Amino acid sequence: MNSPDFPSNEYRFIEKLKKYCNYSPDNRYRIGVGDDAAVRACEKDEQLILTGDILIENVHFSTAYMSFEEVGFKALVASISDCAAMGAIPDSALIQIGFPEGSKKIEEDFSMLYSGFNKACKQWDLPIIGGDLSKAPCWIVAVSMTGRIRPQARVLMRTGAIISDNIWVSGVPGKSAAGLAVLKEWGRDNFPEEFSALVDAHIAPQARVSLGQKLAEDEHVHAVIDLSDGIAKECYTLCYENRVGMALNPPKECMIPALVKLAGIQGKPRHEWFLYGGEDYELLFTASSGFDPYRYEGVELNKIGSVTDSPNTITINNPDGRNIDVMKKGWDHLQQ
Image (cartoon, rainbow, N blue to C red; front, side, top):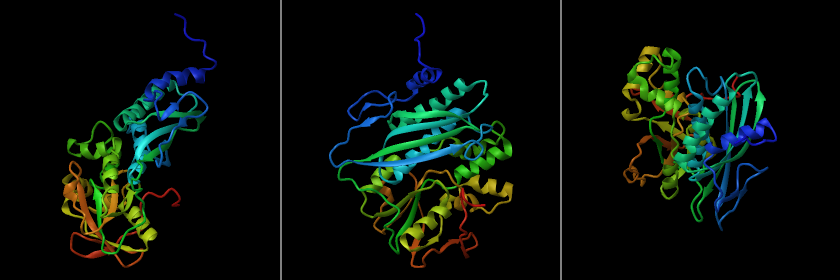
């Protein structure tokens, strides 16, 4: 059978990529990928959230350390994590891609990129409903995402922290940044096995969607933010938004042996990645003393400090027992 007479190479290419989009017409999206725009039907009292993220080659990722499939997966996780921080369910994604001119395996790279998108789409049950592509100076992957809040469900926000709240975080912050340090030190194929969990945290992060929905149902939970730019930056954001301060005292569970050993090898303070790393996509939140972490099965929750009445001031208890000021440092695109 002859190949279809496509109106353009771009049309043919998009048709080839459709199989990765996890889309078929349903009650929510009667029209999805393939038309000028998608059409979303909304239930009564349902709320939609809108978010977006962008990954740029040699700024957010390097193909020396990550495959295109891993880049695609991580690009969606970044926006899915924003949904999680709002207590929302990821609903759909629009993908905009810029690709470098002159690549000899552009279709292969696209297929791997979309394979990564597809893994995330299947894991969190959402479709890709459209997007765009264009030539660019380097690889650029931009994701626009919708999420939905069920009728009568609470929307989680960065505001609401109360003085004397405890500060909690899911997982172990700093693992992703430490994983990047491992990749830069030893490369993708030669790093010591004991650091594999750190590398996995960087190349294959997980968004806390189920946790976000449970936090939204918990009256003891107040302010919530996702950890994309590091504990220090996100804590200062919460302090500013709520006119409070924070005293951090992370437990030993946040200083896992691999982090401590890597810090020794690289001559860094053991709290460096915990405070100033990024791309963990964990959830940071404040909660009253009635919060019960044992209600949250299957997820590690660590109490790392408390909210104080010293606005925009953050301290951390050092291993030697001294409280020191936390610098306003972390991932910042506008920092010169």
